[in-house]
Length: 145
Image (cartoon, rainbow, N blue to C red; front, side, top):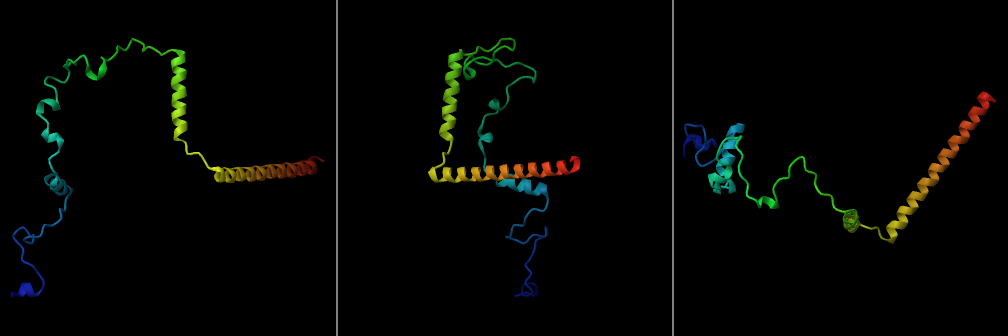
């Protein structure tokens, strides 16, 4: 055993790192590089280059197939056709019904509790406003009496 082993120090190579022990990166650039080297190859690398960008200049128009997402883009000056009044009302009713199905309705016990809380609050507010009204009436009577 050497003196360095007895003192608890380990041998280091010329870069200052201990052999067999990987140190943590110090700078942000070193961390990014380490993450990039550890990252598995994703879908972006598996795609052919022709699909990443169309060939040609940035201003060139690329011809779209007729069935690109169903239909061609409409002209700006054309107005979209509005459905009939009955169709719009039926759509509204369907959407309202769908939203009502999402509501979590309270059970009987919760409903009684919520109703009691509301009634107590209303009684408190009526008493507060009535008390302030009587107090202001007395003050006005004394000042302008």
